[in-house]
Length: 166
Image 1 (cartoon, rainbow, N blue to C red):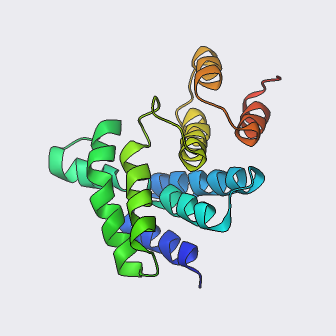
Image 2 (cartoon, rainbow, N blue to C red):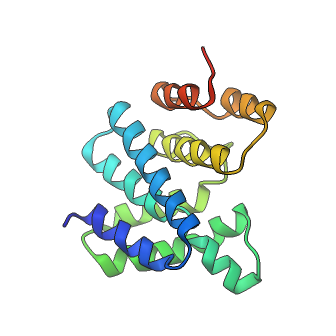
């Protein structure tokens, strides 16, 4: 079994009993992987992106336990420690890979500093899934497309899902 599969199973176990959260995570991972491959990410960057996609929301449960609720900022605050623990327990990740994954988890709801392709793809994949799951209005969808999406293949998937034509 490869590390991505091990991490996927560990994340599923971490979120046991919460099928909605597990489904969200697996969908974000699938879109991040697809966009990353289509955008030509190198093998190491794709590995980090896929890992980050699998643990991007692990801060939700930690936030709910610690504060009694969760939001994007608390996810960013609480997620890196949980992600680090999962990655360390699985093993096979270098220190720089763990740091990058934790950084991505700590910023996946911070959209104004998006400069790196792995970061951009993670945000796009999470938005693709959230827009559908949250039944967002067409006006919000149009705004998010215009302001958030930058990758050719993220836009391609977005447009096919939500009926936009460039």
